[in-house]
Image (cartoon, rainbow, N blue to C red; front, side, top):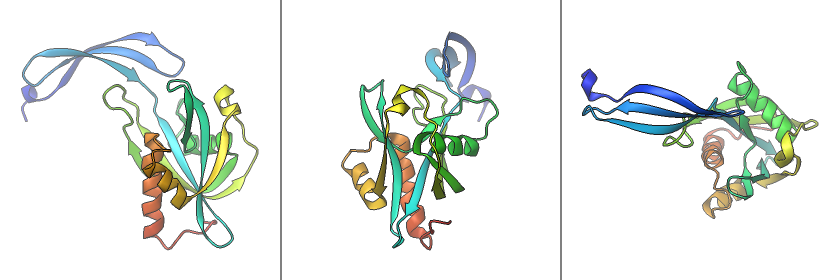
Length: 195
C-alpha cells in the first residue's frame, strides 16, 4: 500500500485538559488527499474485572456492582472497573486495586480475557478485561460519591448471562467480559474457587 493510500494524522490540538481525559481536535488526511477534522477524547484507558466465585457445590457466580452513572442519569449494573489514572501502573495492578476498592475482594489469580475499544468513534481508550479467581473478602476502599453508594451484587453466572440477554446489563465492557468468562468457564475443567 502506497503512502497516499493510507490515513494520516496531520495535526492535533488539546482544547480541554480534564482530570483524567483530554479533548483534542485533530486534522487527518484521507487516502484521496482530502482533509477532515475529528474531536477525540484522549484517555489513559481502563480495566474491568469479572470476579468468578463458587459456592460449596461448585456453582459459579460473578460479583457485579450497581452504581449511578451521571452521563446516563441512572444506575448501571457492571463488572468492577476503573480508569488507569495512576501513571505507570500495569493493567493487572489496576484490576486488583479496583476489585478491592469496589467489591471488597482480593484475587489470588488474574487472567487476561481481552482488550476492547469501547467507543472507537470518539476516544482512543482501550479497556483491558480480566477474569479474577481465588477471591477472598477484604475491606473495600471506595472512591467518590458514586462508589460510596454502589451496591455489590452476587449473581449466578447463568443469571448474569440472562441479564445480558434481557438488556439489564448493557454496559459494553461487562457484556464482553461476562460472555468471555462463560466461554472460558465452559471450555475449562470448571476452575475451582482456588484457581
